Image (cartoon, rainbow, N blue to C red; front, side, top):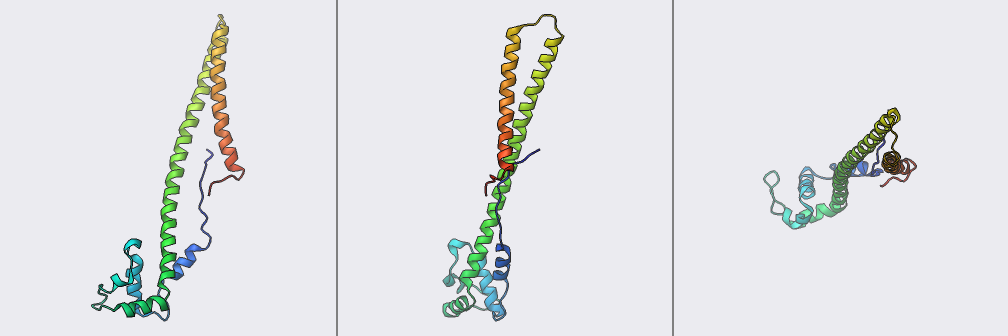
Amino acid sequence: MLRICWQLNNNDVGVRVMNSTVQRRDESDLAYEYFKLYRDTDRDKRSLRALCGRNVDGKKRSLNVIGRWSVRHEWSKRVRDWDIDRSRDQLKLVITQHNKELSDFIDKDFQIATSAQRLVQDKLGRMSESDDFNCHHFRQIMIGYREAREFLKDLIGVFEANLNGSRLS
């Protein structure tokens, strides 16, 4: 079965984020623990001042010390990369769910259209075996077939447009 897919291009974001979240060579263990607290705090609640009240290994640090670590080890940039990666993960989940729902919808539409085709084939088969040919009944069957055929063509046209490179990204 053909599928329509939305895509999200990753580029090298994963590598950048991995490098942004690991402890830097010149970053002390204590500074890195504070960085992880800062990184893992909700964006709306994230602040250096809030970190001053947090204990790490039984120690609290002043705003000056935390501010110095933040500048020296580029916490803002590293956390921005982290946030972008988390946003991408969420977007991937949404896109995956959307693709599944869209695929299920199209599968059901395709089943309906092929069922309509089978009904027309069955009716025409019975008509051809009958001695009493009814033109009006034949016309109604062919109108139904035309609708089913157009419906399938529309579905196939969507697939062909997708296969020819008009992917949503």
